[in-house]
Figure 1 (cartoon, helix red, strand yellow):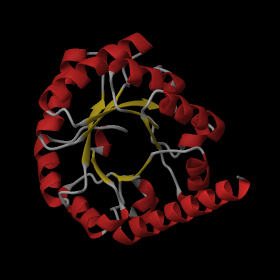
Figure 2 (spheres, helix red, strand yellow):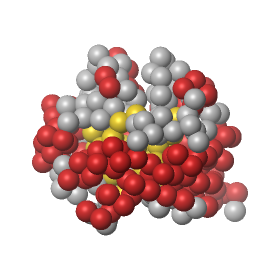
Figure 3 (cartoon, rainbow, N blue to C red):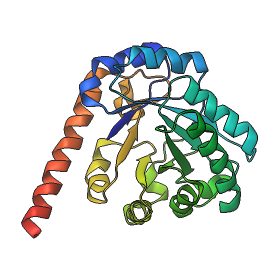
Figure 4 (tube, rainbow, N blue to C red):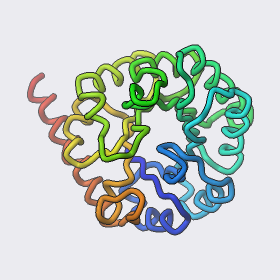
Length: 250
């Protein structure tokens, strides 16, 4: 699945123009961090603008270890119309802290909307900020009752997912997630050139912003429908080639 992250209602309308090429519209606020949370009314307006059959996800923020605060924020995202709730475990330094935060989120969100999907998000560059290690995320998600485990990059300085977690380690992340019955999502300045590896390792959700913005700039650039379409075409091409290779090998 392809997840695209507009930062405004205007950009969401650009996503609507490319709705046939994407699977999830993700609401975030990049100037507040990698998984910066946007305002409830922005989530609501984007939910109203996007076709009903397209799920909307919302980031709750690069959160501290404050389980009650985070649970309330997550419920706010669900009430505002998000069906995927993503939590960046920025301030959790141990798996136990992360599980504590995510259990609160799962209860808050699913008491309100049982069909919502909760995503425990960690960071490929965790070593730079001192939070839980990338390969701990699938177990954290599983133990907390979350539905998906995700990796992104915390520091947007041009470094990318595979700079910090190479493809073989990402493959292990995906394997652990699938073994636990979870969806595996990968993001972090992902480019079209990364799609062959992401397809090969079985990634369920690929998250992008910069790759579909003018100039490749996630902050100054705006999402372009033709770039969304082109990125999706590359995803589909790699999926076809991978399926053909697997069939030939068997």
